[in-house]
Image 1 (cartoon, rainbow, N blue to C red):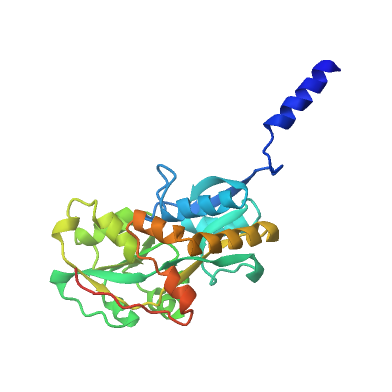
Image 2: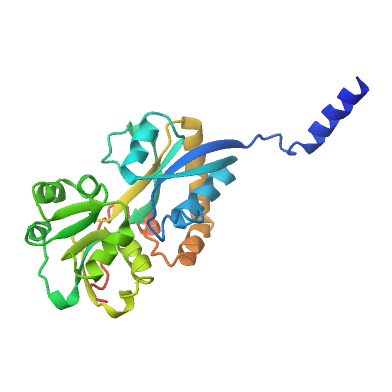
Length: 264
């Protein structure tokens, strides 16, 4: 009995002072899309953001990486606790969506020396196009209808290959987030030498975490707000050389299109 009492006392002394128990949660993300997600090293803007928010809420995230389309299936079947980078266009119960935690700016990128005229989504019908996986679902009905029967259109999970195909001239245009393009291009052997044109055809894209558990979702939203208002969100964006579009969305939720220089 004396030994048992000592063990109980040691366990009590080792417990956190607050009495809180840190619970592990399974978080699923799509494959590499730097600077947002860098699976090798378990880092990237979104990964570090979500880790911090969940840890501040008293949870320890267990990260998993799968092809982008599979995240939704896993969370719908309740095989994971949290799925990242999900738009409201997905068939998921409305209540499961967290607050917007990251805003993307999807664009069309072409080689400047080809001098392609792409002013509307419909103009893509005349060119070979490589888009990110699930683009036909994420970019709205007009884009979906345009590429539905387009034989020169393909989607891929490997965005490094997508950027390489453009820079090597294998396709006329690629569709992807502006920050992702810049991150991958900066490390490509031909990246610095190739001039491109960016065509802004799409509104900004708002992304949520999908969290079926209400208690976890409410804590996530609360800590996300604190993280942004403290300045930590902007500091993290700076660390990954990321344009922070979330603050504009929070202040001006009606703003869906942002102007940037189109040639670089």
